[in-house]
Image 1 (cartoon, rainbow, N blue to C red):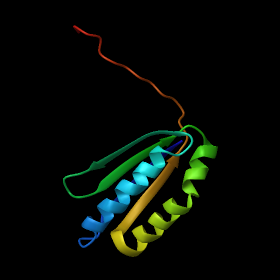
Image 2: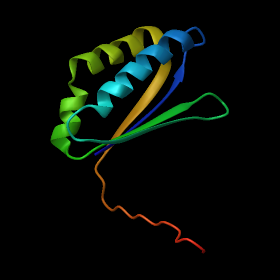
Image 3: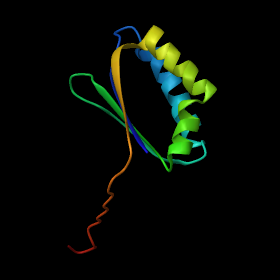
Length: 102
């Protein structure tokens, strides 16, 4: 299961947001079924976070986690001007790594 979370922070949210984001990311990393988390910020300020869990059940547990729900509430009340969430099931997965000397 992959969650894509994109959003724009309010101008006055950066300092407090960073603390909450670090705490909630650490909590996600410790959650049962956690696979990976990455976050990116575009030049125009839009942020994209990608969270991967190993099953619909582990994803649902994370979605419903009490501290995660509180962070979501604070995000709407204090941090974001707006956001979008896409929850996706992986249809296909491919990996490739360059061999040494190529």
